[in-house]
Image (cartoon, rainbow over the protein chains, first blue to last red):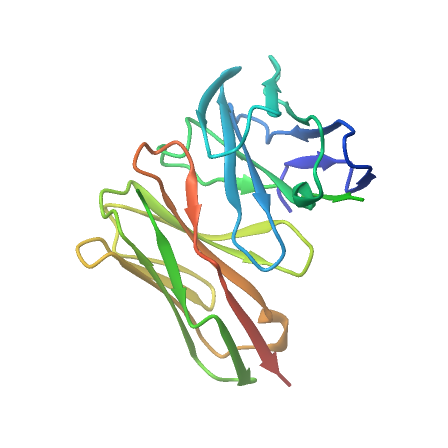
Length: 115
Length: 112
């Protein structure tokens, strides 16, 4: 089991609402990446935070935003939820970004359902 | 733009068989490649990380190879067991090395 924890594990929201998902990175890691995984597909990159700054962003609209805190934990915020936002949201922890020589470790994910 | 594909999409085998899962990527200028396992509705478990300077990496019954020149990686599972049933994903860094690009996965069922 990795040291990456995500909360909550499951969440049901109504279309138009806002949601915050949380991730605690593994000890010693300074990079957190967020991914969205729709059913039956591979994860899609949302954005990455490295030392509290956004360090790359995938093809997601601005209503997907994030933060990284001094302890390197992170939040993913999604505004104006749409039905298509229903997915498993995964957080990955690593050191030095993906380019580094160390492995990326994932949390157990947050299952978001938008109704 | 990095693109990752995996074949087969699904595989069903009897217990004890040796398996080969294939991963292809389009941009060979990668620093590493990582294989993951995902159980239904769960997060990703890291299986093996292969550095660009390596050609193989082994962990127990798992062996992963990397051929950058041909844009291919292979995950070999020896003596498969029902507990190996899961989806296996390979991931290669994108062109800027800022994130992983994942394949769609191979869904493996090992029958007792």
